[in-house]
Length: 638
Image (cartoon, rainbow, N blue to C red; front, side, top):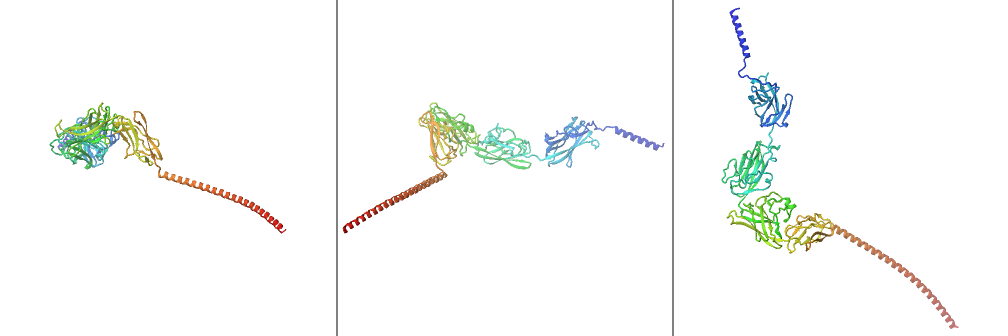
């Protein structure tokens, strides 16, 4: 063997030895790869931190429980894939990456967390495409961190990206409430006109609660911006992200900013927020317009009003419902903050338990004539405590659109109570007063007055109809009156009996009710009782009192005149009767003429017979006379 050949063999052996040595050396970053045989996307995948609902994914559990073949997320949302190690586990030495076909890499090469050693792990989040559509998401796992086609584990899943659900102006709510704090506005408070003093202060005048919902009715924590602006009237606004309005957010010297002022723009409300309403020292009605911007689309959302009033300058009796109190003592009317259907209809009447109708409604107004709420409700002072012992007023809360005295400010519902010594015919003057807010407390007052009398119980009642004669179905006004034994109108709220009719009427007969001012009448402008359709006399009656405490029938009557059809029919009947009478008279005359003619004929016949007899007798006499003359002649000749 030559020296040259020897060197070649040594070199070859050395290289071979080095090659085997290299193959046996473990890389410096090598570790223990996971034992997974495959990977699969799991239904625990998160969309914006929330687990997918069952309706948002399609199960394909061929290789692993919970594996999905497709899922749906909202555009531009944060997606965190959860993957399952099929047939084994992951380790911290494995790496992964996530690509979207045709879109590119969305998760760079990333090692599993140091704590990863189980069969399920959550991958790094990525942002879903902003364009709706269906995309293929590919997850690649490199065992031991070395990507190689022969050893990589790959899984793909279809991801449908949907457009974000927009805000719903119908399901989202904007409700207003007056007050400093503690109460979040609701649909109930929204029914009452919000109002407050125009005096600038740190206390909130009111607030508007915003609750954001999408078109599916789900709460929206993000994606919306609110613009709130006072387009007319006084005041300013403060943006507040707290769920419940916090007290004293206003200022006597406010500094306007992006979140404080007459216009607030780009205010992110989250799921729930409040807009605080503040006074600026000027009275008037503020118009507040709200709009919401979602997905670059701005929608006019809601308009709210807030009434700022000045200090009360006048009191007045706005309405007098009851002015006749009860002899012997009783409350007349009700001082109720809330007027309800039960209190106004079911329990209507001044002396009925449960009524909410006030005897008087007192209005308080500022210098501009705007209703204004005083610091305290008016007190009631009687000119004669032996007649009216006391009175009470409360602010009407405006909770009923149908029955409330007003809209929740500036109007007071008042009652008065007669003394046990009060008797029929007694009188008193009631003074309603408040402290003058611009005067000295306890010295200066604003006042108004009302006169009241006293009535007893029913003693004499009458029943009257508004007309003596009606046409068919004509509206009837039925009036019941009652006086006490002293001849004075009975106390307001005294029971009035029902009225019935002896013929069928239209509408509804007057039910039992209550006397106010000694009378109870059905409406003339909205009639409920109508005359019978049958002509003739009809009667109305009620069980009342006629000069005693005994109940008797009280009756009144009226007439329904003939209708044109009835008059025509009657005229035709009369004409027919007259024609019949004439025909009968003619027939009788004809019979009389026939009888007369027969009598004449009989008379003629009898006369003829008589004349014939007379002629015969005459002939006989002439013959005898002739014979006598002949005899005489014969004798003379002889």
